[in-house]
Structure formats: structure tokens, C-alpha cells
Image (tube, rainbow over all chains, first blue to last red):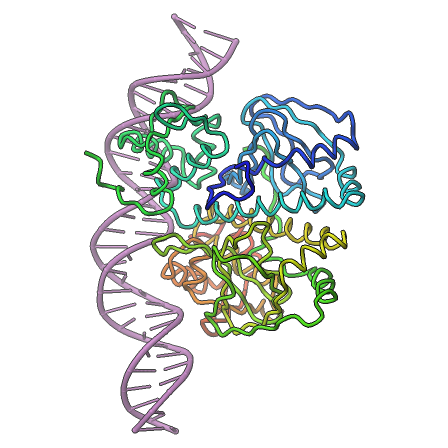
Length: 240
Length: 240
DNA sequence: CGTTTTATTGATATTGTTCAACTTGTGTGG
DNA sequence: CCACACAAGTTGAACAATATCAATAAAACG
């Protein structure tokens, strides 16, 4: 996902890349930002909180989510190092940001960023590019949530993770899954049981391997890609 | 799973408002833009097309959508007059834009807008605010698609329409539904049959009236709001 | 290690989909 | 102006996918 435009890329996680420029400019304006660390489960900000700071994710993984009053949750995305979090136009955060893993953040006053945007137009332009990228990812997720089957969702998710954070290995793409099955479910609009079941099916079909619950190896990326795109040629066949 | 944050605005349709400034600036740069009219069903641009122009929606309603190869469709939003359509960072459109009703658009070369952003930082800032607003709406839709029941989706949809384009009337909020049941379904992640059924149920419960298929009257906005937020106190009761 | 949390698997229930009939609205030409 | 034809909407019955409830099994953690 380094280059701005990869063909039809699945953007499951938030942009993150191409971030350095914006943050570098911020760091110039605020030479010694507050550094914050959070344990897994810790909260950066809640939906509804006053949006007084923006955060530069230095290390670890965050999840952004929204809640319904009865506790149903939708995760909007996972963020990795380089992501700029908490930049919203209004006075209040529209979603919650929590640590999935241990996390290190640099906190900048929102007002400083606003001033920086005023002073240096290139910063505004980079933010614009970033937001547009996020919007594109959001549209991809809407398609997934509105129209894809459970297996298609999982395939899309794994491929997107592979694209942003995947490591090559001899026999496949290795993907880390730091988040719980429940988190994955809340991201894909499924229950954790369904997530677990579908992962087991993908494994049974030989599309992936699961050395441990938090690491997947994509053995047949091409087949996964077809599945993710909705061209489920092998949805029930190939089980043999 | 922390504290339940109370409901905020339902943004079902694209922003549209606060638009004049950006467009006004563009109109100054391109005094005589190409004016385009489209009949219902007409296409402004397709997903994958080269993004050479941006469009200012003057009149009518557009739908933005993405397709899966097998024809499944997700509508990302409906646009009304004032919306700026087709502004993407990359070289290609990420979604399709089609006319729901007869539509009038002003077309501006993308390059002009880019230059304008360079020259006038305030334009960039307004675009930033707009994109951020769209992103917020997208997040609301993700919550809906991932976690709300069919009735909750319809209630959210009707209220959002009422908020952007609703007319007060003596006994309720009147909402125009220019799009088909199929469009509504593809927006809410449901089938057209389910949309029709749920609308009938809402009518049977007295929450709405339906003078004709393309006009709804919200008779009990408060109850609809509870339903939309997921606090379905009357989900099965109150049928009597 | 024992304890607790997380993940997997099974049985059943529910919601929404699919397929199909029928109704209503709409537009056109006789 | 009515009759017809076609598209859009509604309703019904059977079905399928996923959720829910419940029991194990496996990891993670102190």
C-alpha cells in the first residue's frame, strides 16, 4: 500500500502510509509532543469526547469503532504505525479509538495542526489526500458489509492485511492477526463464532494455514482473491 | 463495550450543504462550465473511468455505487443539489455515479480544481471539511450495514432523508423517496422485498404513512428515532 | 500448574433471502 | 378516454445463511 494507487486494492486497514510528511511538519511545529503509551484495551478517546488532540501512532495497532446503545459495535478500521488518528472537523470525536496491542502515540494539540494547515498549504493537501484515501477504504468496507458473504469478507480481510502488513515467506503470505475473533467479527459485521467457523473452513480447503490463532498464512492468494471479489468458483467445490 | 454513547445525527445522504463556497470559487475560475443533463438512469461516470472532471450537482438526485463482478451492488450514498461529485485523489473513479431522477450538473476539469487548491488554500480547507463530513457519514453507514436490523436500517434511512430534505407538515415529516425499492435495498444492504416488507410493517405500526410509494410521512419521529438508534422498545409490542 | 480468557465446535433458532404470484401504478396507442 | 402492456411494488411460502445458546478445547497468564 505504499504507492498511492494500487490496482483495486482491498483497504481493510486505515491508510497509515504516506504519513511521514504530515507528521514531520507537525513535529517541526511541536518539537516535543506528549508521548503516550497504552496497554491492550486502553482507550485513546471515546466517541463523543472533545476532539482536542490528534495522535500520531508510532507503534502498535489501534481499532476505531462506533457503538449502539445496546452494546452492538462496529469497528471502522484498524490503524498501524504512521496513522494519524483523531483528526475530525467537528468538536467531538465521531468514534472511539482503543489499543488492540500495546501502543505508543504522540499527542499533538488539535489547535497546532489547525494553525499548521493555515500556514503551510501543503499540509492541508496531504491531509486531503489522506482523507480521500480513508474514504476510499470506507467505501470498500461498505461494499463488504452490505453485499459480501461471510467467506468473502474473511478473504477480503486477510488479503487486505497481507497488503498492508504482510510478510512474504517461501510458501505463502504470512499475516499477523493481533486482534481477537470478536474484533474481527465486529469489523466484518459477523459474530465471533462465524469468524472462527469460516477461518476453519478456509483452512480445511487449504486456502490458508493457521500456525496459531493470531497468525495466518495465505497459501493460495489467487483463490482468496477470487473469493474476496465474489467470484466464488470454488465456494463448495474443491472441498475434496 | 464501555459506556454507551448516546446517538448522534444520522447522516444517510451525502453532505451537500456548506457547498456553495467551494463551487463558487470554482465557478470563478471556470466561468462557463459545461452543463450536462441526464435522464433517470443516466450515468455520470463509472467506477474505473479516468477521473478527469468533477461535477457540481445543480438539480436532481444521484446515486453513488460500487459493483461486485456478479452484479451485487452497494449504493454508497445519494447526492442532492449542492454536492460535489467525482473528486478523488487517484486517476480513476472509485465508484459509479448515476442519475436517480432527471439531473443537471456542471462539469469542471479536474486540473482546474487542482490548480485552484494550489492557489487558494481556503478551497483546500473547505474540501477537507467536506471530505471529513463524508467520512463521518460513511462511518454511520458502516455501523448501519454491519450491525443494524432491517427495521433499524429503514428507520435510520427515513430519518436521515427527513433531516436533509424533509418538509414539515401538520401531522408529520414528509419525505420524498425518488429512488426505487431496489435502490433503497442496495443502499441499506437488504433486498428490495425486505425493504418493501419493512416499510409495510412500519406503516402497520403507525410509525409512518405512505400516501404513495415515493412519499412517506413520518408520523412518530420519536419512535422512529429510538428504533434507528437500536433501542427497539416497541419492536414487537405496540402492534395492537 | 491452575486459572482465566479466548477460540473452536455443535445444535438450534432467527432473520432475511429467494422464488413466485399477484397487485398497483404508469405510460402508450387505439 | 379507455384498454392494454410493462414496470414497480407488495405479499406469501420455502429456504439458506448467519446468529444464538451451549459445551469443549486450547491459549495465555500469573
